[in-house]
Image (cartoon, rainbow over all chains, first blue to last red; front, side, top):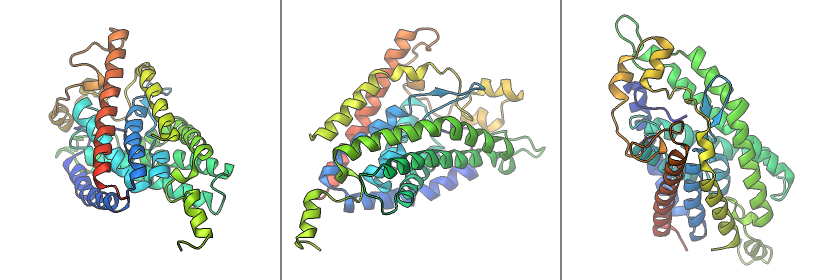
Length: 239
Length: 107
């Protein structure tokens, strides 16, 4: 899903820089006001984990490959705004040092994997979880579905961005200047290989890590309170 | 470091050690084809791909040591380069966020 240089025309990649700059700014503000010391190691681990997870390329029939992102579980643990920053840092490094994803496409790739993945995952997880207990198995299923849906939605976005290129950017004779395939090819290609393969891996990774943290310390999850805080609330010390 | 963070970090180290598994899949991800791969598919290289594809020269392209051999040509060297790339990625991304996090964190 790391769109390289040359596949998106300037209309698309400039639009995404314009979209992403205020989003990064706002996410940075959120981080400075909300981040707790306790979360710092998890923030660092999140970026590192996503970096390595994306290196596990999985083959699919037809010769294509892909990977999970880990953005779903990251969003559930450190929150979607912090996840956006962690994944963006990872993607910038991947582009600059390892040539994975284009320089012009950094903002577009950060939108797909750094915004769509964590936000879709976080809200899908919240919606499916409802009022279920944080230790319930419903939550594990919610996390798995959130992981699957988040990567599939990101693939839909990437497929759309690629598929509109022949419409937006072509020579006077109609020859595509950038991505040559149209929406009717790019969208099914991106969505199907993710929905049937890479997103399933994302779901499994999300569920395994969720279940492990759930059994160890639920106060780590974004928005969940620790036992100490819960006792204080019960005793009326803090409202 | 608490137990949870420590165990997650151990999990990450295991992932780094086994990361060469990710090299076995030899295909190219959809929409990430190199210029010659695209030419094989459609018979020409679109002008924009031609102009922008080499815009940036990444020092460790394809998660390998500079000018390192492909996985097909040397599995041990490509695997070592891949692990080194994972280590560099983890140290820089994790280190950067740890440093920023410590600077901005409350309490």
